[in-house]
Length: 223
Image (cartoon, rainbow, N blue to C red; front, side, top):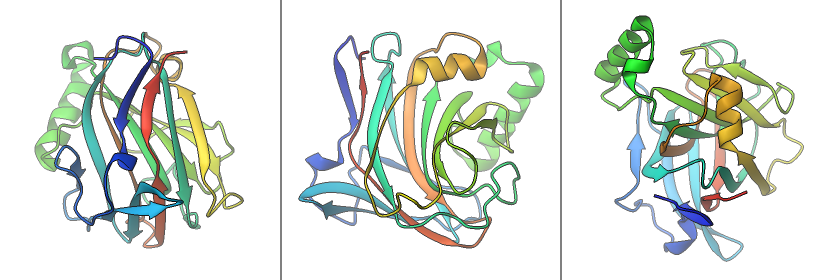
């Protein structure tokens, strides 16, 4: 657990380029949906994660333990080759992104309503994944203004936060740094609990388009 300063999480630059991801990372897939293609590649003499999506969807996840009271700031850089032109992220039928980064929080099931608990249990059973009880999802969208926040069309336990929008900065590295503790409070109205995982990727399965995203190192920092 982080106790202050900096906690590196996904340090892609520590690895050599390869088409096989390190064993501490896990691929998070969805039932009956083609997965994305993941590889570690060299960009500007550094190893980064490349995610290719073509009518597909999946993420690379990492289990972590971070105290947002100590290290609330999340920093990373990302780059896309294009946006998803026909996406409409307020609808299930258009819920696609050129890039997304999830932060998963450890909210006990018993703190949720009966309906919310039931939905999460069903989702875990159907997907075979440990569906989180609360998450923030930072995205690079195509039309929503930067700063837009809305609930996922699939669940009110995931808030979508638009950090970049449109193709103005396509094929350029963009640095991000955000206070996840403040974003959690804004979304859920309570103090952020322990962070239990992060995941990165993109998805094009709803719109049947294609996009590639690259992620640099990801880490948590003190204010």
